[in-house]
Image (cartoon, rainbow, N blue to C red; front, side, top):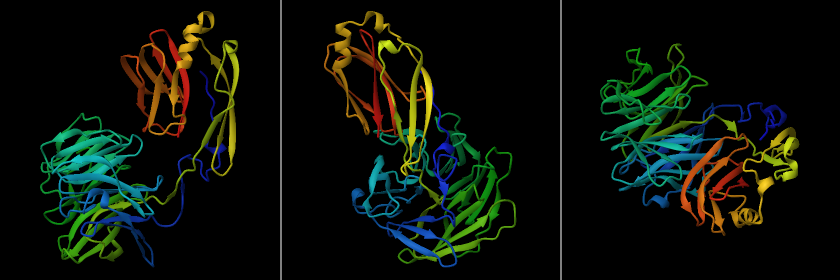
Length: 448
């Protein structure tokens, strides 16, 4: 027990927020094309640069991300991890998939199941690694790595969904209008805004708690405050435009609303990407890019950030003996980034003997401590616990360096080996406390 603190300013990331630094310039725009199963990256500016993100869609059969024949190609981008996520599939295989932003790699299906219900849209909470999936059958959520999704809203078509991360609330378009539900599945309101034919895309200004969505009847964008105190009104009139408005996205930090009109015919679509400022000033849409992007079915605006370098955390000491019991054991934590910048912090920690090992430790307990092994260490997504003794394991807890419990499992008198899912753990050092029939065993492992 004890604490050592290193502030973000002590490590030179190029910023002081310990998350990322701005790359400067214009936010990139990412598009998914329905008919062509292609992904695009667009750099807005006077000389617009368009780049196709080349991927291999074969992992999901004949088609990757489209409303041909069943999916709508919803799109999300995490620039910090360099990953693009897209809805895709064919027939009865509808998935959310991922691929590197630079392309050149096969798509990986990381969430989804065999179903005739198309994946229309989705949102990802990158902190919790939970995916929220809008389908013709309802709204689902699934943690990346989990075997199957959990139903949140059933027996209704959910056309689009947007996530308020700070308040952990989802807002969604359905046949009943605009609804909301907490991410834990509570507080469902099916018709927060009882609008008709709300369209196929909804987005959110999380700073001002305002929703924007497409109304399919008049091909226009509508808006309202999330708390329901404001009657929805038309934000942008697109009724006179000879093209369909399909998708939109909002950047809260700059109050920029992006939307796409798609005209032409099915085989030769004409896509136009617009941007306007939505901060109460006069609306002045600007054309960002035009072209045949395969009939845009998904849009995601990047944040133009530089990914945070990986930190290497090391302790000068991580094991103790009975001679260390007391208040004044010095432990130094060193943090090093991938440029070689480093800083240290030292804490005086208290070494405790919770189970009175030092007064009663026997040869039998020593043998048990050494007969329960962890591997591999460092670990990736699965930590194995090999129990070479006959002692029964009753429970285990995994703690991070702040003393928080990140895994808590109860085992039914297990004498066999165990496997623990560590895929959701961040790269760091962890402490595992294994409670057996004869005492408690504490060991350390590293998550890569």
